Image (tube, rainbow, N blue to C red; front, side, top):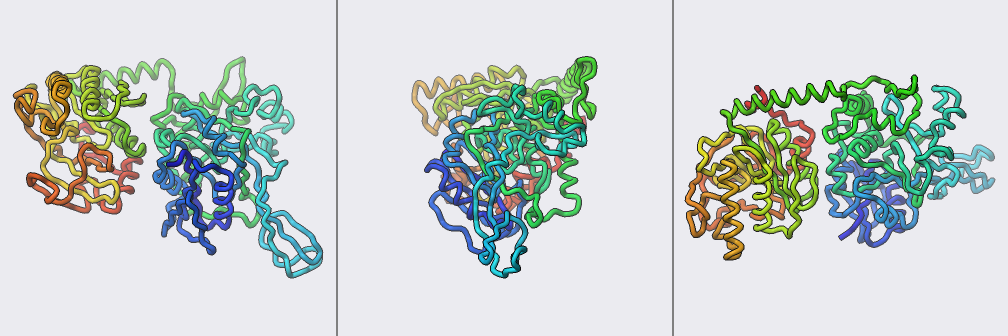
Length: 605
């Protein structure tokens, strides 16, 4: 119902209500606020509002996880993350929504927030915000009180920031640059505020990084980039992660100077960070960040980190100009030159030959089809898991809008059974292998599923080892069932079958008696006389039921017209672990590769 969800996570934030009020007062009816009270409850509570959702975590998740939690609750087109001690400009939401392109991460112009002053009513002396005052420094009066200001400091504005060679955010116009040389000279060379800097002109311009306190993007884009990486830990390196993901994925990070947010800086005495950190936690975040970006390990990157450094050069500590050439410091970890590309190509050829030998000379591939009617987080996890599990098999994805997954085919038609069948046909035609696995967008596949090789080319094979899990509460159900998402067979056999199914529907219309799964019925209900057989992978797959499936979740025998074999309900799924009331955590662990998959024969190749 909303176009924008503003996510405000916080722990022990005394100005949470002020921030919420600012967003609601400055935005339109198209904008909602999702407040995450991460392990605390304000002394005065939070005021109700029709555009406000409040989530209370009994135990703190951490800033990154709380941000992800808030975005999961959103169905909006756009999301914005805002710290819980900020003010925003009137109409900020309409400005950001009307200008932010799909692959942009947009930062409003940032000011320092003048949150409050200390005032002595006796001598009328007034001080800027700072630690608690109990008496007046001038007259010794004991009636000092705090006056809320809650406005931007007009002279303290920041548009541009950069990343140093230790992967820390820095301001272009701070004296700290002096460690690299003369401040005035460096500001002249590096500051985008200088008239000669080509990327500083205009109301919406490129920016290398931000502070992580306020940023805006398309919600689907957020999950395409993987959300906030919780492996960093609770806090730290958020700005670096946001900027590297924006730029290295082929997108942009920009500052929009036509709107602003004012942020209460936590650099003064008395304003520390509310999240407690275990010893070494910040070092862990920085180490994880350096390992991720300086070693080019992020799988969604189309650029290496040195590309970004060169784009915003010259930058102190990073780049030196020697005889007209740029030398990146520290050195590149991965050689991205021709020799590396040649070696990578040779490794792929060897890998494919091993795979072909393992499959007895039979080539196998995957057709993934989707109508996008599922939360983006789950879609992304399923695709990532398929890539990790298929051991390099070719993938053809068929979607209703462009998708960066394998070889992509787009069929933009109204979602439905015949469209799904057309997607399958298009995928099978684009796939050039002997055998095809059909993979759906809401099924989590274990690598042992893809180890199966059909013994005959005239039979449809179904993996029975698949559990259904309710996304909402994690209830798990198993019963023997032949599902389309679990089929593997000769590609040409499958292609011919679905072409006939489309003809059948076009001639007679769709009826469930025709069925989705090949090999279940002879003509006229079916389209051929080929039968089916079943197999069981060593570990199960998970069919996630989320409310938009073609088949609904059934956990009671009364819901079946014919009693299924081996029906059982459980709180957990073999291998994967507990799902009831913990499925969200399981998905998080799958997403972050915390579930170790070591028993696949592929891993021994």
